[in-house]
Length: 487
Image (cartoon, rainbow, N blue to C red; front, top):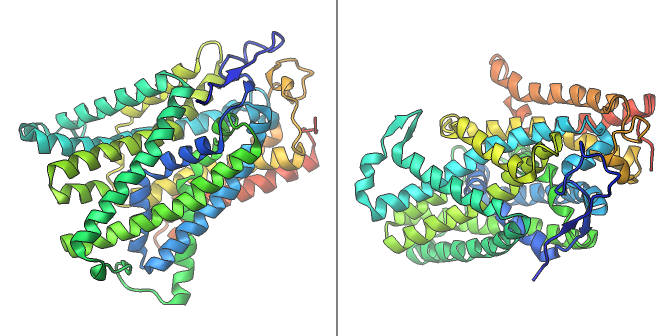
């Protein structure tokens, strides 16, 4: 069995920048399978299924949807390898490696931004998983239907009960530590695959393979020329969906026993795994047409329509497990490190994660996620905030620092330290964030406000706009007034 990773914190490290969770790892033990299982948990979620299914509403043919999904995930794979290397080499999490670019205090800026986004998504994923639990309650305890009417702040009593159950279950897994999370993820990803195969097999057997049509496009069919910009938007949507875990992937790659092991895990977990998951999604969705008379792209609704106790219990619990998996790896661990980085001695890794968990409830995610445009609009805004931070980190590490980082200097408040810059902040990184973040956010918000001309398509590329501008701005500012020097 893989042994838990061990950190080492030399006495010279400043306590204002250090605790046992942020210090460099002494042992890095994760194998390629552990990284592969991480991505399985990230991919096999209700949100991922619905996002893939929503692409059919764009008027694309099934082969075009599959191409867009695969092209998008290949891009994600490349970018994940880029962001994985600095943390794997140094053994430090995402907010700490940012100290080499933003400064030992300036690194709190990307940490807080990423942590805040994780809080929002933590609430959404918990809410989606609670819907599966509600179906189980209604099926096996019909009397609970009386508790399923909206009451307080837009959610029913039963909704609050199911949300609380999921909230506590995730907190229990998280509280046991990173090694317990790894064991849960190693088991959850394959388990979800088994049930998805069973669900697809059952629906296909009911429909008959001859009645399965992979042409699921809705609305007006698009010609080839018309479909090109739509496919590009779909590719951008896939990248935006994974932009959160992609940005802070260093929180996980730091545990990899080697960079090669991390790259193998990424290849298996992203292009290979996602292609198979996408095929299952298309086949399962297509089978709902002959079986139920309509296209259903939400797996929770699919299981509900089967309406047999075993299917509802097995399917409901599986999607609960799948969502818990992605929530912990994508939206619990990130703020745990991010908020701990702000005040290491006051906020431990566990405390940072619980801040996110409590904050997710206060946001009442069931209210703002109910909008039909929420999937595309939310992903666009998410990408707008995360893209600049990604581009700046990549430019700072690969171009400005030339992949050389002094690990010990990441943990000193000495004004003469390499990463002290100006009072603990790198002005170039700050201005690059402003210069790229403003246009990226505007690309999402302005099209919603300007109705005279249809430019809503720009929002689909918010991540790429922010990432590209952040990358270029960081390099330009560093060349004009160098702050980062290779260690």
